[in-house]
Length: 164
Image (cartoon, rainbow, N blue to C red):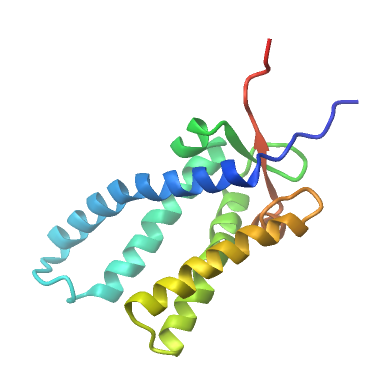
């Protein structure tokens, strides 16, 4: 009977998460340029809610498409693969559920910042603090998975090549 796949370390998963954020800068740049050109937006504050909704959809397309193929570029770099609970590749439906659940990384600090009208440094502290708490909470999962993966029925697995 094969051993269950191992979960990448928290440090590797967070490094992958950070690298993914840097790669998303390019996606945001191209999507923002496309949105601005199509909507004829001249000021960054005009149509900002429409731009946010557009980026939410673009991110969804990006992640659902790549997760259903097994990996994003950042995940390939860090040798991490996303699978369902049974060890199978994600369907697009399961990848969509994971995308929606992954917003638990951002939604609580965004809502807190909005509700308490936090700006600048205060919002950044809440945001970074929540990211740290959410990451550390994975230590309480039986397989050390992030809780949004547990909710979505997915898992991150180590895909490093075997050592000779």
